[in-house]
Image (cartoon, rainbow, N blue to C red; front, side):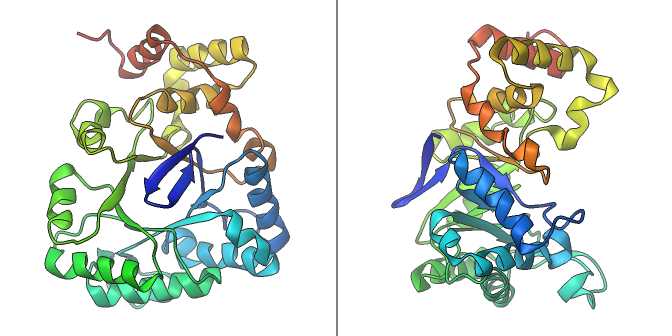
Length: 297
């Protein structure tokens, strides 16, 4: 599978495995988690996407049980995780409200908890999960720089930031923010025209795309024509409609890294099919037109 340079000495697999729902269902034993990771590795998918809040602050520990049971896995992987969302569940059950915390104290505590839960000595990429209206960039930026200098975190970035949020944080940092993980899919295509993607592309920053299948809504009754086109193209190339929808993101020259999550082993085994799909310009626009519900101007 194609690999993308994220930072000096750090490359990610073009498709990233998302662990948001790792704790859902019954297949959460270390052997089950390991099987999911191994299936990804067989396809060249080496980058795993986590966040401290996933699974009510429990998903990282579930992942960690598999890494501890099979220590050799760690050096085959790149781990992405996120921090700054405080929700009144799990370790933060005493919180009165859900809020964001980008203070140095909270970021450092979150990193220590993530390292402990996942049983690793380093995080390949740490993201600030959501823009914090109370963020003091002169505190947050140096805190991120210090984590990189410590070696606990190898690179840092953001998630869900608009260009001005990105610039504000970057202005107080010595190092570089290396990505912005934003929502992008056929059903969430605003980033292609509102400047979010262009901002990253201009700076040669590889974007990451969360919910690349629209949270599953892509396959709902309301998108029959789009699904019919995805299914037709998939049959022509011997893949399913999901692979075509992901390939639509891969086709963009910004080198988007889709974060694709499923707990179904059969589906995990087919994630890499998206890399096989070839979409010419007219086919890309055919899907885009169906997605936005109108012909381009």
